[in-house]
Image (cartoon, rainbow, N blue to C red):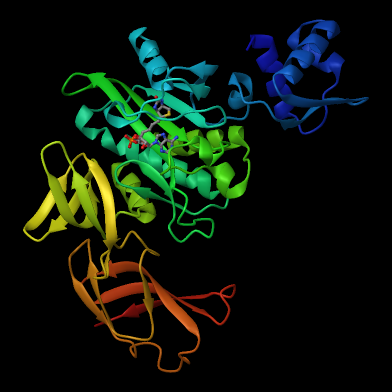
Length: 405
Ligand code: BT5
């Protein structure tokens, strides 16, 4: 966008009251006729600008393009937008090869050759969020998987603000949660995927591209059978605001990067941990229980033969484990019901807890619904959990209890 126009829209954004044409003209050092022309151009780009005797003010932003995505974006990325790219990852790669040194968010309304991992096709009709971030982190390639994890967490946080329950399947899929009310067995659950690419030396990355595909305003019949879209689940969403939330959240997680925090956030949103999984890698297939992730992005799988550390592969969830293994970062991942004794296996320190049905509910009537979201394992001797008692599900009382066993 031309400089005067972006200063003009910023002035309108920053002001809580309407700003008059003469005031804008004076501050931008242009004529009133020029201000009027800029206002018309901004309206064409999708800024709803009201004009009254007091002046101009922005009432809504409906367009999806470079200027509207930049407007109000907190994340420090320059936005490059086109209605169509073959692949935003490919465009970001072109920029990297042109020695572009700033961090850029390449955004398209549609992609004609969107790619998944291993060059799989990624269906990208108009209406989705197709974005690739060109970044220049100071780290070695070995540390990069954590950026993929950060992108998945950013997508989850942004989508959850639309009131939709989603979770992460290792390594990079964002799925509609199995028990979300919108899920029915006839539709797919994959809402988003992430493709990370890089180049550099063994000890220093030159550039990193984090490509995010999020099925926003698309009818899911236009997508592969395993996929779903926000539009099919909740109706059309404000795609610009959603993209900004993804970018802001990703920037917050990665500037500066804190791998331990990102892994903890990933664990908290994971649907893979505690599942019986089958991982297919180019060399072998591994089956077992996914018990944890480890920096920079490996999945730890407990098999009959021992523990396997898997760095890459395709992951299939087979069935819930039934053995009540639980990771302390997943505070609500496993729920204890009061009617029977339960054995818990903590994935962090591998300690085992037997939680007795009578241990802490002697006075509760068993007809009340009560369960626990486990909060932390303070080994040795204490397990912390939040206890919820709900005569009706809308009434939750939260209590933190220490159990010494
Ligand atoms: C991924 O690969 O999930 C990474 C997808 C990354 C796409 C973004 S969009 C912006 C940027 N530009 C690009 O060109 N790519 C990135 P993978 O885990 O390999 O999953 C691919 C599989 O997902 C395909 O084989 C299909 O089965 C399925 N699939 C294809 N299109 C889909 C869609 N729109 N939604 C959900 N699943 C899809």
